[in-house]
Image (cartoon, rainbow, N blue to C red; front, side, top):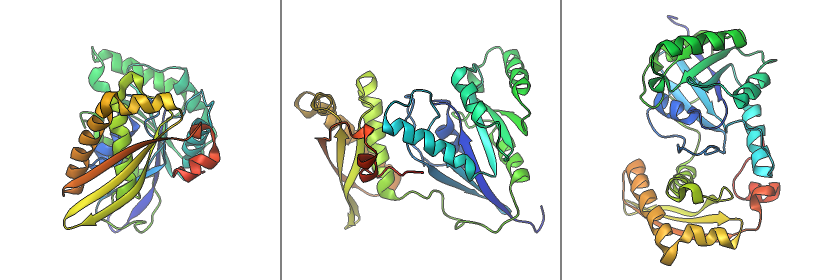
Amino acid sequence: MTGVFKAGFVAVVGRPNVGKSTLINAIVGRKVSIVTSKPQTTRHRILAVHSTADCQMIFIDTPGLHRKAGKAMNRLMNRTAVSALADADLVLFVTDAERFNEEDGDVLKRLENLKAPVVAVLNKVDRVHPKERLLKSISAMNARREFAAIVPLSARRRSSIDPLLKLIPDWLPESPPLFPDDMQTDRSADFHAAETVREKLTVLLRDELPYGLTVQIEKFEQDAGAYTIHAVVWVERDSQKGIVVGKGGSMLKKVGRAARLDLREQLGVPVHLELWVKVKDNWADSEQDLMSLGYEAP
């Protein structure tokens, strides 16, 4: 590759909760996408840029493709994931190395007529015991279709990621860099602030989490070496507002404290964070509301 520079888009797709965002964060070396144990944590199309001396890989983090797309938000997330495929020079099809289910099969069907090569990534290999089972998983994946390559790895432990990164340039076009060398994501700091608050809500609310919540930043200002951030947590019903606020405001205080500490680490300066919870009836099933809350139509 001496004297030749390559650059291109790598779509990362798969069913919900197989570790797509964890993989991208591991590659870039920082959190560009929030990660929780809950499906459908990623709701937006996020670009993550990994630059080397002779290649720039632009990873497209996408919402997990899922069957049940009853609400407008779910349909929008599916369309966002599918539209990323149209821009891709290469597709990483991420699955759980331990199990392949019907949702994985649905995603694989969507890749049938793609012109872009597809690499199968078998994630979470650290959980596969005994290791002979991994050979069976690789063999079974190989029988499902012709892949450009099959790469087992553990995104969580950041193991065996380098072999994947060495393979990717083979399928990218010759091109000058598409983004500045020091750029790691196309998303702004206030977007990451909103996502950080949503991540803490998801983690702390656990099974009580109303999926019909989102976070919108109303103020994001830096002054005297500190950030002041005002954010609104939107929910769909009054009963959900009570869950998010908690008894005597206890839950909202926990969320605010956890988000503030994380944001302070991300931004490198003190953060003053204020949260409010407001109700917008059935916002997750209204495309107009989704657009007003920062969701993008692909």
